Amino acid sequence: MNEREKVLDQYSARVFKNRKDHIVQMDKDACEVPEIAANSRSVPGIMTSRGCCYAGCKGVVLGPLQDVVVLTHGPIGCGYYSWGTRRNKAASEDGRNFIQYCFSTDLQEPDIVFGGEKKLKQAVEEIMEIFHPACIMICSTCPVGLIGDDIHAVAAWAEEKFSIKCVSYSCEGYKGVSQSAGHHIANNGLIKKVIGTGGAKPDKKFSINLLGEYNIGGDGWETERLLTEIGYEIISVFTGDGKYEKIKNAHVANLNLVQCHRSINYIAEMMKVEYGIDWMKVNFIGIDETIRSLREIAAYFDDAKMTERTEEVIAQELAEIAEDRKYYQEKLNGYTSAIFVGGSRSHHYQNLMADFGMKTIIAGYEFAHRDDYEGREVLPNIKLDADTKNIEQLSPQKDDRYYHLTISKEHFDALLGKTELEYYKGMFKDMGNGTIVVDDFNHYETEKLIDLFNPDIFYSGIKDKYMIQKTGTPSRQLHSYDYSGPYAGFQGAINFARDTYMSLSTPAWHYITPPWNTEPILEGSIGGGQNA
Ligand code: CFM
Image (cartoon, rainbow, N blue to C red; front, side):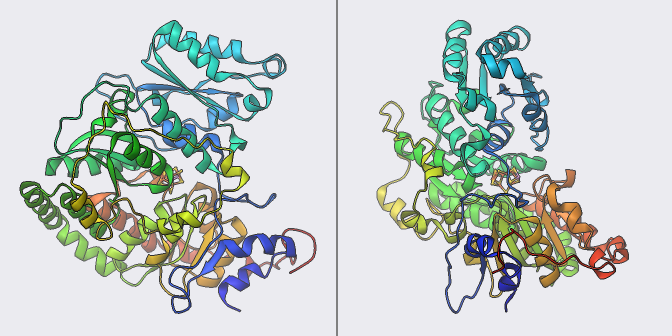
């Protein structure tokens, strides 16, 4: 039995049937890129680490917008628990930073019975009176979808009455199988109602949008610093420390950089059709990956001065971290790691760990799709199920007002295949033989894999961090960075290495005896029914 089979062995026939396709053990000789089941419903009753559709829309994509009031239409719990749980960092020059507030309509039982639209209008009126923002976004939670409040009509009313932008999102928690559905819904709303409404004309030469960068721990700021130092003009960031006022003019940029493919690829693809803007998959997590990304951006613009400046900045940044880099390479070389995060970082951070000689032996995404594992070449083979079809698929059209091409067809074709221009290779290609990949991992699988592989450190999130530490394995959060960061770019890589080395050298872990070493283990199967 290999490790994969040992994990699955505990499952009942029904659960086994579901989970077996979500767990892959890499065997490069048999198959370079295996197939994995992803973006499908979790098994009911199993402790998954996923979030809901509302979390993906309100929390992930819209939450970081500093000049937008994001109003949760629903009971207070959804608003309260989605407030401040992600480390959205924003610095506002004029003090108008709404992300420190929690806006909710606080629906009560009578509203559920008689309808909540009145309360929603009242909330919008109050927001206008107290905060007078230029843009309000309304996000529905589960009960709103069930009772059928027409939030879109209220948004239209608000636009008319207050002459503001008001965008409504039917992102009820149950809308999809995970927060991934919410990313898609948020992308749709931004492309339909915000991007391209600012009126600016494309006239800047080295202008870019940074997509899928949410400024966790200040990563966005560090990335922006590097790009600006080279000489790029950043039109907008989606959406870390982002602004409605900037995103509405995102259509003028000459290149879209995609950091998190999972959450934002829809906007990148649609902007290509509407405005002709090419997109490039970048990764500013990891030293070698940051260098690769900067060089590929330079190759795209193909300007001698910018290419020279890119190399200057790389050399300068490398010189600044040289001593620390060497120190941590010596300290971290040979350590093994496990990494379970949402839909991008489990891949990105493998590159950063490799910079310091660490090897990832367990990896998994909560909610990524097959292309995030297997690469975008798999896209034509993905069958859309009913849950996916439930989300609106837009058919964007060319916008003649702003359509602009930056590079020639010949140059574009020459870059295809050589760079990650309009391509993402996925996680599998970077994983070694014998390593294991789990889609929509749960707590049982996490525990079992620690037992089988005994990684030196386990990166994941708050839901499993303490459970992992109880096994005597150091754990660091890669959603929030345990309040540290930034981890992006050159300086960020050193911060990450420092934090990792600190965790690995904490003597506390050696004093912990996992409970199963001293207490009798309850025997049983998982999922009920017959055993496999
Ligand atoms: Fe993209 Fe993210 Fe992630 Fe994500 Fe997230 Fe996040 Fe994440 Mo937490 S947008 S997929 S929904 S990189 S909040 S900033 S850390 S699960 S791996």
